[in-house]
Amino acid sequence: MRDSFAEYHPFINLLYFALVIGFSLAVSHPLIQIISLLCAIVYLLTAEGRKSMGFVLKLGLPMVLLTAIINPLFNHEGSTVLLEFSNGNPLTLESILYGLSAGIMLVTVLLWFSSFSRVMTTDKFIYLFGKIMPALSLILSMTLRFVPKFRAQMTTVADAQRCIGKDVSDGSLLSRIKTASRIFSIMVTWSLENAIETADSMKSRGYGLRDRTFFSVYKFDERDKYALIWYCFCGMLLTAGVILSAFGFSYFPVISHTSFDMKTIPFYCVFFALCITPVVLNLKEEIKWKILRSEM
Image (spheres, rainbow, N blue to C red):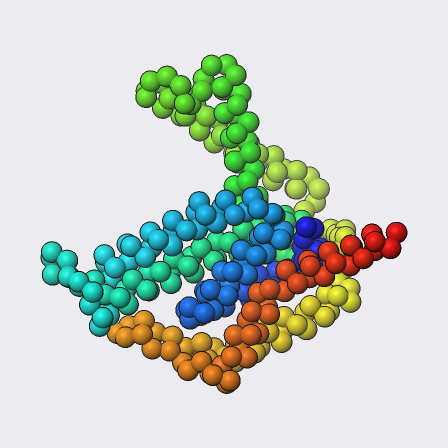
């Protein structure tokens, strides 16, 4: 499915991720975390397909379980004691649940940032911040694209080394270490040269000069205006919910939370509507496209 949300104005994309990631980090209520996690997974599935599930299962699930196991070993707060370790420290239900919550929050933010790095491309960053902070925007754009570019280049270098009989998985341990060190040295040299070439290229084009003109393919159209109104409405309502403690939840010393009633349910519904917005936009465009094809 085509990611129609990524075709919106860069400011709209940035505002959406700022709201979703910001509230996912600021609110520790389990229901908010589950809503954010499920919406992040659904958005990845609709935009990238089933291949994104490999990232969720290989990285997300182990990270949640690891955090849930490690946290009780160091955090012994809580009143519900399940058992005591040999050193006398208690294992509490609250510490386990808090570790599980922290793991879910971490995985959720990583999933949202995965979509963020795909939607907020280098040219969008430079478009938004090139005039205001030209040096910082260039550094940010280079940083965001460094990891995928570094990974692709490392695969190319490793394949080239394999062709000349220098495979990192063959030979003795010392031989494999030498091969890995050679590949790493090549990658460091490539990274430094690439950074210098990029900086020189941008400087030769007059990037950062005060009187430099900018060309942009992005236009703030009607659909962006409606999206901006929607995000502002959700942002203000959710901020009010945080101020009014509608998402109040505490793990220590005992689990306590704000009552889940008709006064707080609308805030959760708005957060769900905000998180699921890109999926709805993609489905809307997909349905519209299928209708047009059926009429041809």
